[in-house]
Amino acid sequence: MKNIIIILALLSVTTIYSQSFDEVFTKFSKTKKETEEYQVNLDYKLYKGVKGTRVYENYSGMMAIHNGTKYQEVGAMKHIEMPNGFIKLNTEEKAMMVGLSSVSAYPSLEEIDPNLIYTYYNKGEFEEKDGLFKISFNAKEYSSLQTSRMEIHIDKKTFHQKKVVIYYSVLKDFSFYDENHLKNKTDESVDFPRLEISYSEYKSEVQINKSFFLQDSYIEVTPSKIVGVNQYKDFEIILAQ
Image (cartoon, rainbow, N blue to C red; front, side):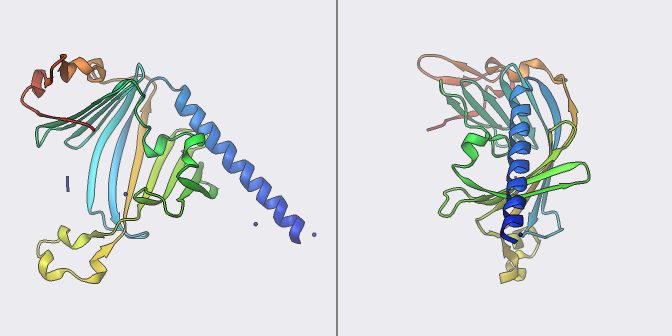
């Protein structure tokens, strides 16, 4: 599947900005933690640069939370994030990565909590418009992350995210998306990718098969090995390090 009299006024504005940003992000994070079950449709679009409008990759999918386990499906990829580990599937390549641990899996970028996100990001901009809050974060200097900026668009009524925009800090050659990419490659073909993830049709109850959330639906774990089961019995098993 082809990343602030003038001084007093400025101080006043800064205080309001800071409180608004922090209050919105804290409430957003609290809402996610307290929502024990939901299902939502996803739409992934990959663009070139900060303002590019051409869609280079587009995948639809869904994500659901049930009994402390997150199930995510995008294109040929499936990701099951359990309290005791994770399973990542590629149904096209018939491969499965498995990581089992007593430590809870690391949260995804758009769901990271306030206490952890500031380890990697600095507070960015805050905007309120068209029924949404938009908060952004800028990666800290010398960060090991492959992202430079992240934006979260939050519904003012529900405090669910409506969109997450991730700006990557690793250059990508977009000429490979053209048929004659070897002839058409130029310096302008290389830019930083921008990924936009849209969320729609939230449901408070999971509609998909509950077996999708069970480890036993994918693998069998014995003292000596891990093997795929059911339709995954022929998948290559890769153990996460």
